[in-house]
Length: 321
Image 1 (cartoon, helix red, strand yellow):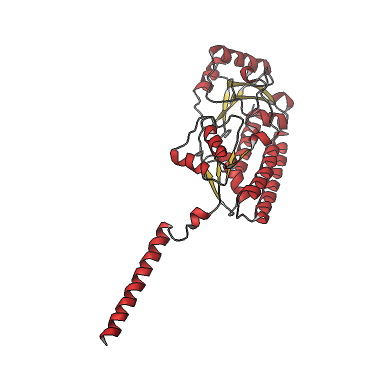
Image 2 (cartoon, helix red, strand yellow; image 1 turned 30 degrees about the vertical axis):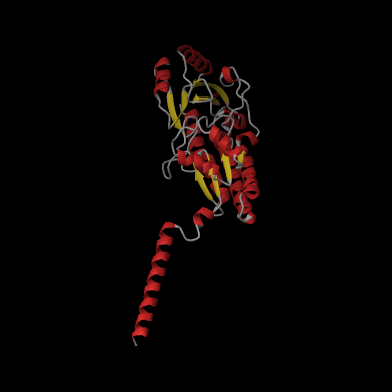
């Protein structure tokens, strides 16, 4: 009798121990390492992060390094984020010098054997131009990294991202990725059509853009606008204008009859306010989401939402009396 009781107690103890370890491992992820085994795509900017998530869907984890409302020219990485790059199956980044503080980490990941894809370099990049119809003189002839302001180029990049995911990320369902890419391609095509109709309301003599820095060259090229100049005469927000730069810009604006400046919503408006004073206060400053998405529900939580918000703001700002 005592032997049977002892055996029962041992069995009960074993059941308790097994249950404890199962619950502990479920809580900590030590049993099976499911999360660690999931394929991972790491993306530098939040705009490309949104595009990549639309394509990848549930097939892999997508980690985005750049926070909402950040500046792609100046954001940096923590040690943990830098390690993420080197442990990824695929790294998607903008390239052409945009992520100025991150590119060395991308290069380190590439050298360690991680597949990397520079979206801007594959999207038929334009170059900065000099003069009234273009960009900064010191960057003339250099490739412009801001390709996402042209939705047609984003369509091309999105298709290439799908190819990269299928080729380099083991374990994904190719059919699911291709279906996601086809669905998103249709949404991007609809966006282009909608933007064309929206901009059709802007008269030819008002199709002139002045921005906080040179970021809308692709949009101007695609939809027939002239780029008059920028408050910061550079393709990066890290540059600073001189007093002569501001005088040249105000003269160009006076000549072109431009009274609207489009400034990034995440950038300080001090320089734009200086420009307003230079022109006697007769300048409208319109906020756009030019280089970063916002948090969800804050105006530009996705690429599609950002482009629609910008198009509406630009069309309204350029037709306002």
